Length: 401
Figure (tube, rainbow, N blue to C red):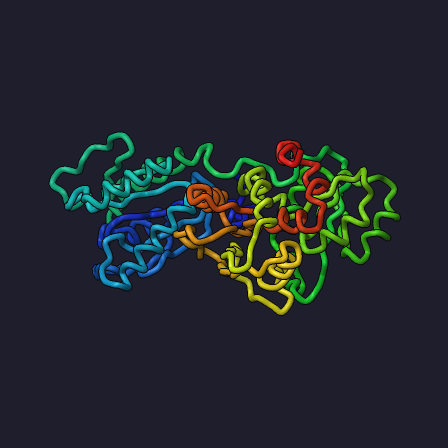
């Protein structure tokens, strides 16, 4: 799995701890991690929001541990906390249901188990506070007696989590499967008013690392220098990868026999289902005035004057469709649960989201009958270069035949 410094949070195994208030979730999280990750007390509802921590958990490796509020919280504020806890379910690879062994499984605990199984989510039931029982229950199936207070069963719980984690997570490669050793890859990275100062964004960083891990060479330039850069190369690039917002300009400078795609399209394949997102592009042509469109981003960056999600994409959509849709902008973990009134979802590449969350969002969109397209696919379609940008992906390209 690599070490702690090699794994971005979105690519780590996410482990969520769920259960009722005062079941000892936070105490157990601290016992499992060996850190004071969560605030603990005897007061019910001490954990008010999901608490996330990226860390190294042996014998598993790099993970994100998530402690959630009690799912039996009360009142209007409690309902909001419960909703936040349920949203975590869409992001995790493994669930730990923490049950107060002195009280046994409740109806809500059983409802959670049914939800885990419905979502095919691996889970283990930690029967906490077993030290308070005259005779602790025996371990059976995926139920383990544990005590956060005494440390009983903590080792076994970590081993069970690690066993569930085998084969869990994203086994895909971002770009390596498109390359052969010694290939040359050109990255086009515009630096404008919306680019962060002094650093590259995560999709660019991840792509560079995956290309280098493939024993290939990376050449990076801005879109304004691409034509000159290509003329200086001694060999033909195996692939050109561009920021989506420069798709139109870059396509004009890339020779017809050189494959071209975008960071966003690579992430659409890496985190979600590229063919489904390509199918969703057709909805851009049928938008009408007043149609409701969601533009969703997985990160929570500060939006600037030339922001791609709130400024550039709406402008391109309106120029392409001739319509004036009504937009809903979401970011981070925000995503509407009721999609019935929407005509289209335009989603970012999802570099800050787990593949679990991206596939969950795509699944609820499919269930609601709302097409979804991602930034890179939408922009390529709008600029008339979708076929060229999908050349490296035959299964998605076939949909355009």
